[in-house]
Image (cartoon, rainbow, N blue to C red; front, side):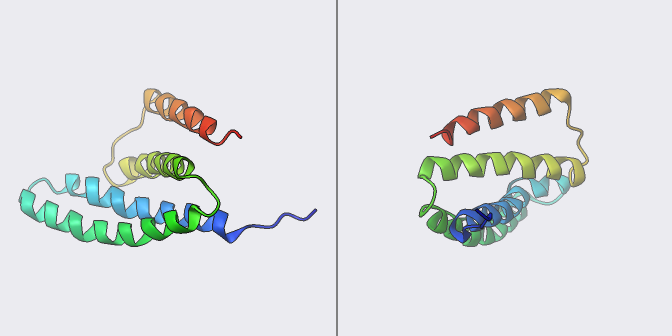
Length: 117
């Protein structure tokens, strides 16, 4: 049997990945600019978060035809960790340690149980 991709299974992952990039910048991007007033960080974060919602809401709506709400949330959390790890290293220039890697792997391992049938 040939392998086929179900759009309803794939699009939520793509959209959640993109939405998490926006949300990570909304929540943590301002940490690189601590000299800016806090209200600017808040307003900028709200503006960025709007685009995150424009991706996350359709991701969950489409995804719920294939995944349970718990699976969607778990997927989002694992994607968040992956996006945050890259963001932390490349944008904030912070190092990730073995402790981070082990902690993230334990979370991913726990997430795998949500998808066990």
